[in-house]
Length: 238
Ligand SMILES: *Cc1c(COP(=O)(O)O)cnc(C)c1O
Image 1 (cartoon, rainbow, N blue to C red):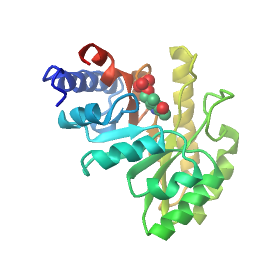
Image 2 (tube, helix red, strand yellow; image 1 turned 135 degrees about the horizontal axis):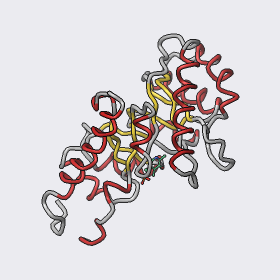
Image 3 (tube, helix red, strand yellow; image 1 turned 135 degrees about the vertical axis):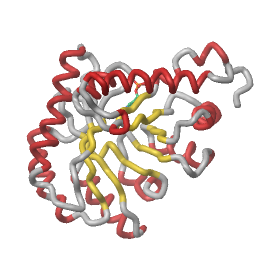
Image 4 (cartoon, rainbow, N blue to C red; image 1 turned 120 degrees about the vertical axis):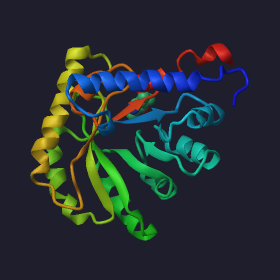
């Protein structure tokens, strides 16, 4: 434990987030069990991330592969790691053995490179396809219009398993534009799913961060990626 941190700091923060998740689920008649909360630890040290694990979080996310490697090496093996940021092909080999999910697969080239390495390592790799549903120019992710074509290539993937879609709302967007982006991702998933065959299944929607996770849940998120809300205020104890 970080000695200066109040004992129940993270337990309270987890309870606060879980309560907001439950309330958002209740508004749509959803079960909170359908929503996985991923704690994005990119803002904090290994030590603080370990405190969060100690308080009960087992699903952790990082946006940079090297940072994920650094934390995974130091933290307990039972953690499920989620890569939520861009993956360069030269970082695939070291990343695959560590992750439960890669949320941010954003090109056909990356999909092919992942399949090749998954075969080489004899692993199954769970991934989500990142979609630029908000249409923001500078964003990673497939364009909505290219998704039919992407789905048509999935039959060639055997060790890489596509489990759903991921998106980020526009940085400058208000809550209505967030909602629109998230609803669009859900509709896209529902439509594309008809052309997806096992072992691929478009089940998951990874969407929603600190500022918009309740809207994302109302629009069908099954994975939310929360960073700041776990850690804001911590600086007062360091
Ligand atoms: C940082 C990050 C998050 C968490 O963002 P917060 O607004 O701090 O909750 C979620 N998803 C991705 C892809 C990120 O890079």
